[in-house]
Length: 267
Image (cartoon, rainbow, N blue to C red; front, side, top):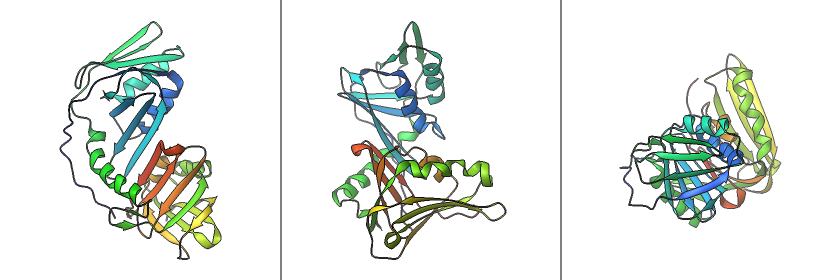
């Protein structure tokens, strides 16, 4: 299991940009992070928005296109209110800007405007810099490890094959345990949610371009795994695994990365 230490959350001075984005695309993008996340940092560069969250359970990074005049970071302290506004307006595009960290966030859609107060502290970003140092080393090693955890197994699966597990709560209730297993010789990737009193739910994904010397690789997770799998792009994604190691899912030409930290828990 990879353990993460806290960080100070201090940032260098950054320029604060303005960007314009497709409203519906921005709703889908922000909504990816919304479950269990109250705040968010948007990193804006030329033509791209990237957001990342780091928690004890997982790290998630995703990108989307935009039109921007400058590079910098925009800080969202209330994701729910931002989403509510974006869903309330009907304009095709919206404009987002912020004059500085801790300053109000401004969003314009058609003839509607939103001004939201923001905090200088963004909880979902507090561990991101630490995790991304480990991510950088993993990228340099071609994802053969994450931190001190070896990742000797790799495969490509269709991300949409993982979506049905998101219904596990409706099928077997809450507070279940999860297991991910890659069987290289069978070209099979299986994710299971189980609760002793309610039963088990499986999803199987056909694995391609599989590597790994062992008969199987297994890692354990808790009930948050199905929701995280729902963030995976609807396309082929690469998975990296080890025995009792984090589950790494990469896709979208590098603009999507999900790392779920292995945590075996009791029901």
